[in-house]
Image (cartoon, rainbow, N blue to C red; front, side, top):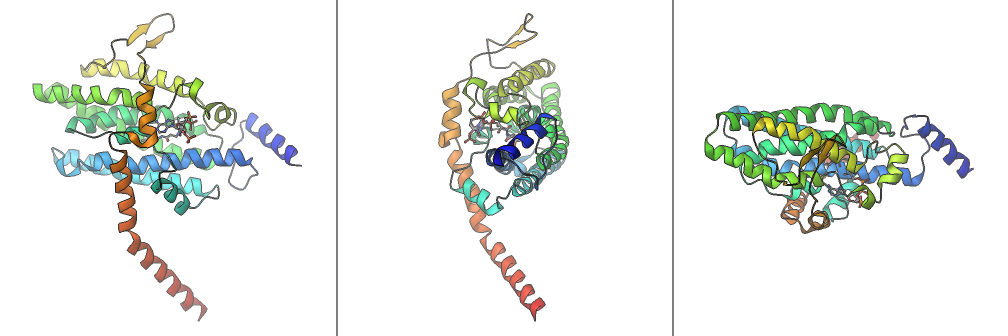
Length: 312
Ligand code: ACO
């Protein structure tokens, strides 16, 4: 009977059907989704930290208002995504516990420091740009609650990308020589980590094949990385900055850009907790959780009181 259910499920996937929470699904499909969606949620929440660092130092009221809105969007994305993962039968407490104990991953990119104001623009341009490239295909993920959440997330992500690019354009067109140098410095530091966001090369990606077969991922890590490089090169030209890769050049035969070798040892170091700020990022999340204990206790005490009142 199990084999029959599995075959029926595979047939639905093959027909392009979307799977809803109450539908039968293989255990491994459920697990893969909980892993990916919860890690995605953690990335949104941890991703607030590098930018939060600059709220008090934004150069103008306009930039501050934009930055605050963007960080609040990210909190919202985290909450939708936790909700989507909860529909698969995992509690938010379980997911947060996995983050806080270092069992769950979150995107490598958020373990790098934001050293100057241009970093905020570059995060919008490159980091959110890479995120959109990866997330637009997720709007067609075979698991419907995730796909639905991604539609709104992508619209907001697109605003994040544009605000970043626009702030860099202003610095490059109207800025001083020092401000222009700041943009170039930020691009030099974020370019390679942004390319790493797409994950290991397809040949080294243990999850890709099954996730593509199930329609969880629609496009592979390498394909998305290539699309990102091709989309970004002309934007860099308009900005007037150089991308820090001497091997980056147009390949007319492939109709795509060739680019240099990614330092995969750096990638795995960061993924495995040894990046520049892994300890600080996780420490900040654990502290926020512990500082919030009294709110959770009060909410539970209130709920208990309401329940006894209703019984009486
Ligand atoms: N940072 C940290 N871990 C990563 C990264 C990364 N940039 N890329 C891959 N990994 C991890 C995977 O999670 C996996 O580990 P796990 O099996 O313990 O979960 C391992 O490296 C091997 O990678 P893959 O087999 O390629 O994993 P997967 O098929 O899940 O693909 C990807 C990784 C592309 C990140 C996918 O999970 C995905 O599309 N996730 C949704 C998008 C997302 O999380 N974005 C977060 C950053 S953007 C933002 O939040 C603004």
